[in-house]
Amino acid sequence: MDKLIVEGGYPLSGTIAISGSKNASLPILAASILTDEPVRISRVPDVSDTNYMLQILSQLGASVERSSGTVRVASPDGISSSASYDQVRKMRASICLLGPLMARMHRCTLPLPGGCLIGDRPVDLHLRGIQALGARVRVKGGNMLIEAPNGLVGTTVDMRGDSGPTVLGTDNLMMAAVLARGTTVIESAAREPEVVDLANFLNAMGARVEGAGSRTITVHGVERLHGCDYTVIPDRIEAGTFMVAAALISKGVTLTRVCREHMKAITDLLLECGHTVEFTEDGETVFVKPGEHPKSGKILTNPYPGYPTDMQAQMTALFAVTPGISVVKDTIFPQRFMHCAELKRMGANIKVDNGTAIITGVEGLSGAPVMASDLRASAALVLAALAAEGTTEISRLYHIDRGYEMLDEKLTALGAHVKRIRELDTGSENSAAH
Ligand code: EPZ
Image (tube, rainbow, N blue to C red; front, side):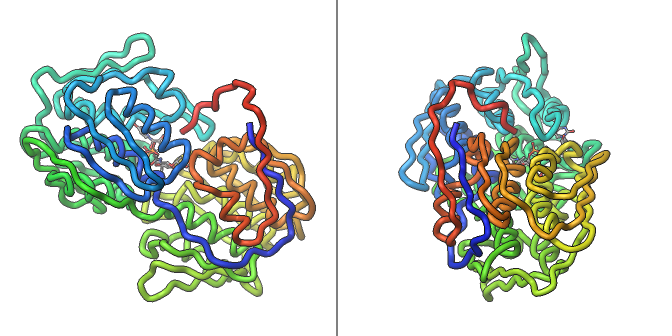
């Protein structure tokens, strides 16, 4: 398992390009099996999660080719409708194969995803959606056996759960509905930009999806879909992560290939905390540097367009060295505070209680050996290490490699002193990812 050695205290500067969105790529790759014609998808980041998805697609029988950032997928007739536990356990997000498999095959066998480090990952809303379209669900041996012998029929479904909308649940219902008979109305739909990107991809294939980005999505079923060429949106969480790094320790960093409208909550918080964030007119380039007098802040995570749960760990690293008391409450994944214990090993003053972290800013952090735990918690440790005094060794780097493309190369390009130590894998498969 690789490690990252970070020599802290070197201010970042320079320019890097942000990669395509991991969380847009995953459902779009899954949706590629909705047609038997080839699709070409550009700016798919080369990270473990997208590579796991490509492995699963090829194990289902699709032909998959990747050349740099562009992926070509062709799913001729005869693809399998069953993904095995061994394939799915590596990545919770493979649940987004449910919709496409049901739309195309009217049946599928998928393992029930277990929990993961950021909390339990229920799928009750995914099943609510597919059952509303007429599917029957049985659970046997840890697998969901789902079938719709008479096909799928459009209807109106309210997809709201106790924690609000579901991103992949909305995606699954949208993908199941595009080939269903009649019209499906999705109420309480997730509004994330990645959901909109999937809707745009489906429409590029000939689907009729309306209202993506609002709380109500309408899908008019069509007979078949055709191939297309598509480019995924920029990764707003990668961009947000680098914006926080620039606010933490830099002489000013420029990020290109970003999308300002997707990052309003992230931008607003950095501005409220006194940092400099300046976008170009077209909103595709942003310059960020630390404020003269940084201020503490408050985060209450919410579904888009609220403050993203995927950014609260990174911001906690900044709050750790910001004077004053900051508060982070995660309403979506209340257990998502694995990074706090590790940050405390570096000298942070954080109290976690009942889904809320109280952070009292300290003068500075000190480097220490720390352990990555989940994707965004690991990113928070890297940010803290950049600002810490001395050397930090971050183990279990595979967590970061799931969602950040060439992170060490990008940090080095910005002047950080980081080095990846490749270690022979001890054979312990990556822990369940989310
Ligand atoms: C997506 O996960 C993202 N992953 C997550 O990013 C992100 O944290 C999450 O949305 C929330 O924004 C991908 O897009 C691949 P949800 P998803 O269904 O769709 C509850 C990262 O770091 N829920 O929107 O799986 C659930 O427990 C990852 O890139 C149910 O109760 O999340 C949570 O509290 C981590 N029943 C809330 O809804 C269900 O059937 C939102 O989850 C489904 C979800």
